[in-house]
Amino acid sequence: MARLNVNPTRMVLGQLKKQLRVALRGHKLMKDKRDELMKRFLDLARENKKLREEVEAAMGEIYTSFSVASAVMSPELMDEALMYPKQSVSLGVGSKNVMSVDVPVFSFETSQPEGSGIFPYGFAETSGELDTSIEKLSAIFPTLLKLAAMEKEANMLAEEIEKTRRRVNALEYVKIPQYQETIRYIQMKLDEDERATQTRLQKVKEMIAKDAIEEAKERDREALEELHSKKD
Image 1 (tube, rainbow, N blue to C red):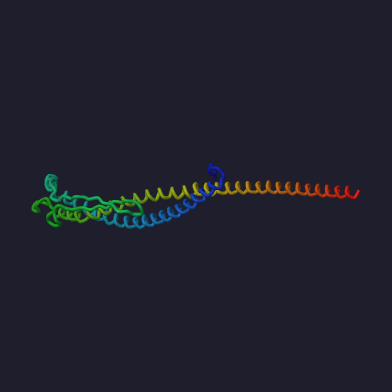
Image 2: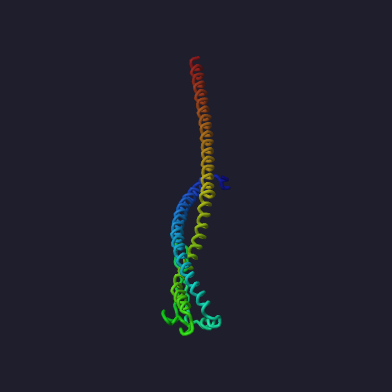
């Protein structure tokens, strides 16, 4: 792993150690977030699968009823019956926060109360299967909205999981090893400089000690010579 291009000084070493601690803490938080997102995503996927199967089964029954109604009613009568819907729906979109991801929450309001108010036609000339299909479609509508919100949430969580995974990998395999390698290099460089400094100091001490010994010997010789000259 290539190290960072920095000056090998103690100040830089301290800064890198601080950055490494932040990166390690961020890595742990990102991993925890990724794991929690995965758990929520898997729970949501299981719930989504169950709800989709329920909706698909209900929609199959609705399509069957519409097919039967289309078979027993003329196309003109079917078009006339469904031309002007009596019921209207106002859709609202909110949001909720799931692990820093704003996912949609759908709500709706109908213009007519449930019951006979949903039928835009009279019952005299229409098929009972058409009534059944409209009733089932009205009943399944809240579940359809819930399924749509759930699938959108699953997609958004999957995107956030991928982003978090890339960040975790970048920290784990790039940034943290770079910090560690650079810190080892600077520490080794500083240790080498310290050993070199100690070696130089030791040599200086030896030179000073040698000079002191030579000076002491010179003083001793001078003292002896002076003593001999006095005796003579």
